[in-house]
Image (cartoon, rainbow, N blue to C red):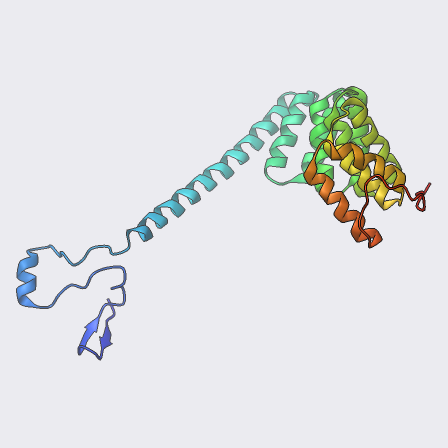
Length: 251
């Protein structure tokens, strides 16, 4: 091992001494240490070894998980080979591709699944989620629209539909979707908040105030966010109960 010269004591030092003790060259000390022993060669920073073991465990676990995903993909492909017209087999193939981050391949697998089984809600849901991930909001809205026909009373689906319409810039359709949410679940604070922000964007102050008054009874934090958004847009404080009627919104 390379040594470094220490001018203060006139001897060489071990560059690893911060982690390990130095082995003494003094004969008396060597005698005390005994054959093959070195009391000074002790780890001064045991957390370093602990960290190394932890990182090794993480690496092994990550490799094992990756291998498991590849095995799942192989199994799904084998399922397709055995049952090429089975919707569930194509659904599992989509899941395997999605787990590996192969989104385009997952899309094709899910599309095949719903083509074989048009009421396959789980496959539609996974397909819509990937379209959202890929910022393909128009296609996501088509998928969620189909899902709302399959499950018309599902609040989460109407919320997702509203979200993708909002991301796509279709405010009117987003408002219609969020209205459906509050029709099914009147106390859905997030839906009232989304409606209020859309009305604010459209400068429909009367409708904004209506939603604000409802949200004020449901969620204080979201209410404060609305006040901030109102101030940022109109450069004035929001006054509850005041109806100036000077902003009527866009059609």
